[in-house]
Structure formats: structure tokens, C-alpha cells
Length: 229
Image (cartoon, rainbow, N blue to C red):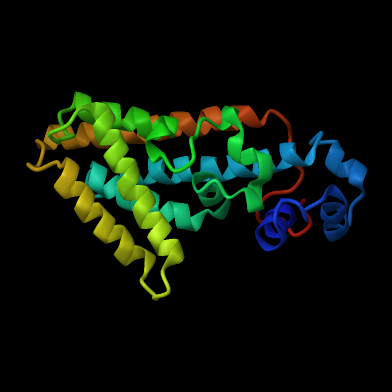
């Protein structure tokens, strides 16, 4: 899988073929087809692995972070994860050069450019609202639109920037704007913060498990393997 990932990022979707994957991995094409019917199936699996890694990261972080995962802090975390996992970023930015048709796969439950359509993130926002930890002066749909616009704007400008602005600096600036727009403007009670941490970890862990179930077929090799597809 490492080889396929590298080919997609270096050569793009069209030039990444099963023949080239097999040649680079020093295996027969039939070995690849034992696990995946098509190139798109393989790419979809790779994207799901990135999504799982993102969900696991958030779940582990929410359960151990000293500060509760309020919307500003989780927005900062998601920004850094989008840049950490390139196929997840390609899905978010609808990069058809890298992912091809996988960008539009409805089974991934993700609408490009809109982090609020990512199922666990949407559930997380609902949980914040239930715990009165989501402020703002507009309705829920307007809040989601504004949050998507902020996140997408920061991602896009960082990708286009000719400066050497660090990802952490951009993430911190995003978090501050999110705080000013959506709060929490007053620090929630300690019990509320504890609940937010626990439920955030649960939401993203459940999402990771659901995406694992979507894989459905065994994989040969792992991300750290030296001779995987």
C-alpha cells in the first residue's frame, strides 16, 4: 500500500496503474487483484486508511489532552491532520489529479471543502451544542457554513502561500478566529469540559471502527511494510 500511495502522490491517478503497482512491488498483477477488483477499490481503501488514522488521532488526543477539545482546539487539530495525511487532504480539497473518481465516492461520507459534513465532526458539533459549548449569533446551518468557509480558506491559502508560514502557526491563527466566532466565549464548567473530552473520544473512536468495517477485505502488507502495494 505504501507503493500505491507514493505513486498517487508522485504521478497522479491516471499514471498509477495496476501494472506499475505490481512492478514496483515486485509481485504479479494477480496478487493485487486477489484483494481489490479495480484500481479505484484500492485507492478507496487507501483513503479509508487515512480517514481511520485521522479519527484515531482525534480520539486518542481528546482522551489525553490536558485541555478539553473545544471547537477552537479541534479545528486546530483538524488543520494539522489535513496536512499530515495527504490522501485525506486530497479528499478534502477534491484533488482529482491524485484521487480520480474516489473524490466523489458517496460511501466515504465526506463532502469536499466542507469539514462539517465529515460524519464524526458533525456529531461532535451536535454534542457541543447539546452541552452549550457552541456559541454564536446565527442558526446552526449558518454556523456550519461559516466554519467551513474559515477552514477551507485557511487550508487553501496555506496551500497557495509562497511564504514559509508554519502549519502550526496557521493552525493557531485559525483556532483564534474560530474562538472569536463560535466560542466558547466563557469557559465551561469543569464537569462539562470532562464530558466534552469523553464524548469527543467516543465519537471519533466509533467513526474509526465504522470506517474499518468498510474495508471488508484483508490487506497484504501494512503502511510500514517494505513490499506492500
